[in-house]
Image (cartoon, rainbow, N blue to C red; front, side, top):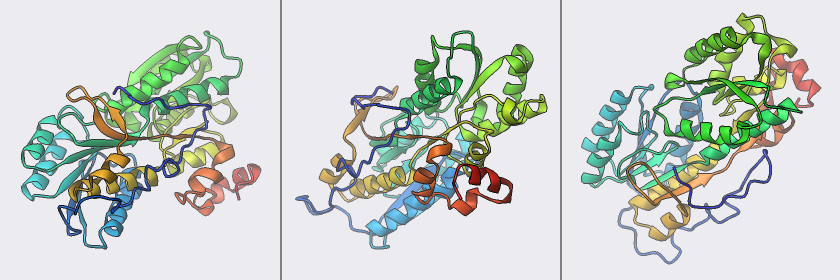
Length: 370
């Protein structure tokens, strides 16, 4: 992906209110022509997998609720999750095309493999908005987080965790799925911060973002490098961080001896690991903001509200097949012990009671979370 807009990055803990920039405040009737469709619309929503709990727990429910609110409860969503199988997702999308949904929000399992099906939707007159991952083919728009910035925040925070880091510090990189275009952007962003500062002693791409595969990669890295020689671990997401920690514990590394480990997605288990000190950080991506923006884009596109749609897609990105795709890129926050309350708790993602269960009660008290 080639970003066409300059985004200021002042520190690793970054947040940006798009509402404050007017991105989410465009009105539906601000001088626009009469909508081409009413509120009785159907939005197809395709999510990629279930290992990462966010898609079923946050993204889809928020999209569904927002579409209902934007259409006076007349709009419907048709939902499918491909469980990390690209062929299944093709079948699911073809079914939605046959059912003549009005628009599709697509979070691709395999960005390249879905391109022909995106073309089928286009030929059928059904717009496709790529959600979270930049699908190939003639998509109409893209909404996601600033993925290179995600990697930059992970890499920068990891370097900061090492203190007086030097090039002799050995880092293990456990990257995401090679079929997910976001994974390459995360890796590129992280390498922009890590390269020249530390030694990447081992690097792996992880099929389907599998925690079990990540655990296997980490066990291999421990055998190759030696458990006492690993200064830190770059994990592209939280689910894999859980597998990485299992491998380290199996090798006899636990407690204060665990190296700093990154993550992404602010899953509940990861937030609890951050509280207890097992995981150093995660990247909190404000899902409500992205999911609501996707719903607004979908409704505006179907209803022909061009001014609102343009206001929601002021960025531009390139995919391997198409250029200058209208987009909205949402920025992110480095989640650590000190800002749990001001991020995932303040945004209503988790209650303090969700995080501070009996197992973590003492650790929560130590950081004044409960």
